[in-house]
Length: 388
Ligand SMILES: [Zn+2]
Image 1 (cartoon, rainbow, N blue to C red):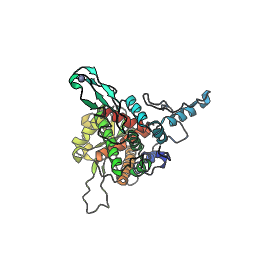
Image 2 (cartoon, rainbow, N blue to C red):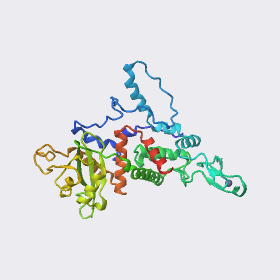
Image 3 (tube, protein in one colour):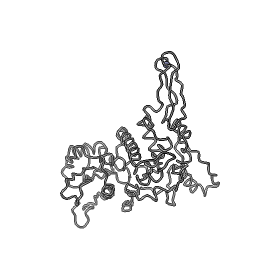
């Protein structure tokens, strides 16, 4: 067992992509429903303290406090305990056998396979070799010499890493550990030396799972707004930096949409990197119900919104007195705040990869934080979806 310092990743990390960043500017809005951080003293009412069903936790049950006065505090303690942390990863997914059991329980590894020829269940041979997850084979007739790796099509396919290490890296990604910190936690895992490249690989597999999950499930998102409701919409360019003089940094147009009184921020990378009416209205229609009052700046791309069933109000960003508040009180302050944070995050990250993927990951982390979800459970959910 590796020695571990078991840091609280959320608190001790200085990684630029820490989700903390996303709430820094929230204080400007009294309507903000941004929940308090997990480490704060107040439990959030309505926040589920139940561990997600199906998750495997061998943690001992804490005795629950009796009496109604202690109930909420106790729920809060449960909530903290129910989150995966590095200690739980090491202790409950520390051996090959534990990992196999977890993977089977989570549906990350199949437990049976039919022989398509004999229409009978094949036999699972558990190989005890390092990192192996076993083979399915049919012992009948002409099938006799055939076998199929159980890893086929799973999260573990084509990997030579020990399973505990795979789960550690998956956890470290979900908890937003930097490469450097991830390496500190995993270096010299038993006989395996974990290289930066290995960490980068697994981080990119995790990111890919999030992206695929997001792209294939975003159609299920409910539209925001509705009659009598206000949605703030703002387009913004990411990645264009003043000090990049001489270098052609094009930047990416991103449309942000948020309903007043909600934290359900939607961000879309503008197709073709355009912000014309077609693109903007298309994205707005994708996310916002008809009849909604939409607040935007004076960009002409929004002028046709009333033709599409929306009530449109404009905000004057160049008003020197208060650049966010128009004479009738219309403002896009909240979206501006989000945008500022996102931009800062993007500048700090200096992310070299695909911008859309970066944005999807940032939004994934934001959703987890706001809804008090467990990052490890959420990444497992994505992996399960992609590698089903
Ligand atoms: Zn067979």
